[in-house]
Image: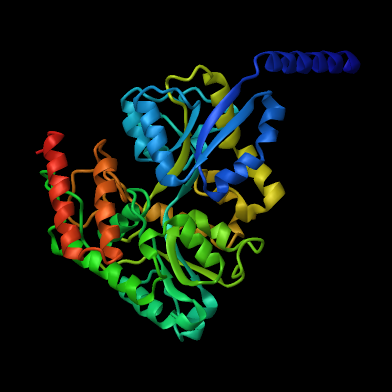
Length: 435
């Protein structure tokens, strides 16, 4: 009986494999050139071995990715079967009918295990439209040796005043050490995301309750002037063009005393294969100003299926593979627990293996402290921490961030940049019918 059952099982497996092989597809995936996505590409053979499907990758810098996928989906271009998108695009595109609803994932996938903050930000009307590959907030990563040398102790929850003073104390121009590295690069999701999250802690907001732009406020002037003054004092040369990847490289080379950025970077700066300061990194919550709002954002890089794909079944299979508990185990077995995709699943933070990772708890604390429904000191009409979840925001914020970057580079004053931001934002909102 055992032999017969085994033969039946083997025959069934062979038939499934044959059926999978007969219907094998080649799917095209657009993704961002971040380390976790690049690691995923290196593990794709596991997916192909299990399903028979092949994968073609289009890997792009963050700003370029956003432009390409937005153009493709809005024009029904059909270039991609899976897109890497985030919390800004997903609810808007889901509402437009541009994405395939992920409401029929397999029981073994355990969609209920997705962190509620991530599932909520990737849903529209309670329906999930993208699965988080990883989730993140932002936090401070700092050099423990340089902090000690400066005679300072990093608080768990520092103020911006402390950060500026510590940055100045840690700066050593003769040895190419910048006290602080922050995003100044134009792009709504690059420097635009950072300065917006920072502005929340200064009491600023993008719009009042009547959708009037607020860049003429004292809070915005304080935010941008503080940023520029701090970076001019203690930041790297050319910071106006530095984004996530540029600052990551500087930190790994030992050229940053502090870096405030995505929590996902913690595994990169503590990896001894890539980072020259891997054993000298500490973590703290993103700074505040005592106004009740921290300057940390909430984001997920997620995988979504455009509604026009002809390969939906294969695309769903890939998403289940890449965002599953099994994928986390796969990465852990090859790269160690510190390098698994963070911030997406409840079970990861309940796993003793991951609890032992030095930045795990700080990452979770940062994610849980970001509230996209209540991100500003004064009441605002929009949802989002580092963005306003309206369709017009990406275009407006890209232009605003360009004006800010020009001010950082000394091409215009902060006051001129804020005046231009105020005018272009109000013009765009009036044209869109908000005012």
